[in-house]
Image (cartoon, rainbow, N blue to C red; front, side, top):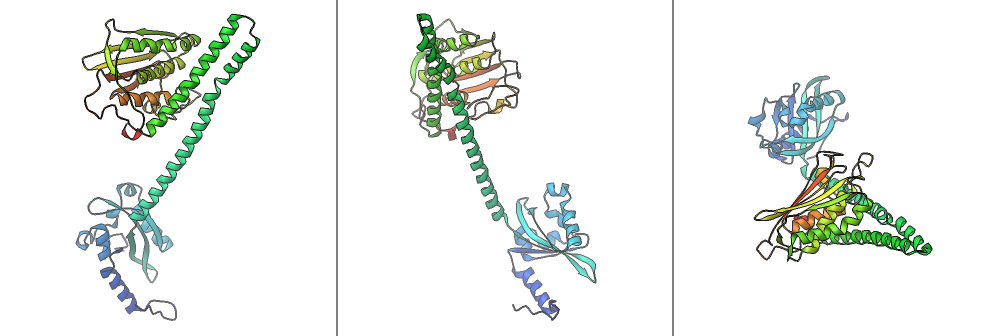
Length: 392
């Protein structure tokens, strides 16, 4: 269509009528609605029907606000849109609108006041469904957030692993000096114990890091064996006695008197118990107590690790078994570090088709970790297969 204008730039009346008739009847990707000065619909195009699902008979005489979401209605956005058009002239707007079926679409458009001799006669609104553009934008925003989080996590990881690996260096340096200056067997033995203890810490940390990498790649697996539960727990407790002694924490075990045979991966279960005990000892002050208890029913065995330590704040409990869990260091150390130990506990227990949970009445009220695992390996070739983070 050729657009003709007068010398003053106004539309010729016949051209304007032809354009409106074409737009309202044949253009389906754009909606055109007319409203009176009160915002009630007086005109409705074919495109408006295609976009919203409302036919002209559904909306004529109704308030245009029927397209607004409940949230925008509560904020008065329907009134604000008309006020802005009346005050400023043509105003562009983007927001979610409602279709007849209750679904939402992202409306992008313009509202214009219709004036005659500077007197408001009503409004016209042109809009289109730009949901695909909005979803594309939201996807991009999500990708940016994920990348930002990944970058942050990598930074936290590198900073924390450097801190964790640096912690043993000071006592190891002291031990090497003692060895260099040691003139009697007792001082020599003390230095060797320090070195062994700190090297063991570093070895466990590195092994846990490797195992978490295997989890992420879906390569962590378990090898079932028949073992005695009490023996497995005694070995884990013995491995933690020196840490408890140096931390001046009493470590006790309460085990059933009758031997209990279970089918687990003994090496992995050893990791579970040691990580839970070390975690409890770490957050229990001098003079506190840590205990491990075991029991069994007809189908499962149960492990409980309890401590009289700092406890777990309610805000931390839902994230306790996640990597990179952090807490407010000013109020509690619980959650400091990478969180590898508890994250790995969760993965190993899940591999055994068991559950682990943490309980605490709050900070400075101690904590309890409960592990529940089947006594016997579940039937089926799929059990014991590698498992990845996405399946947990």
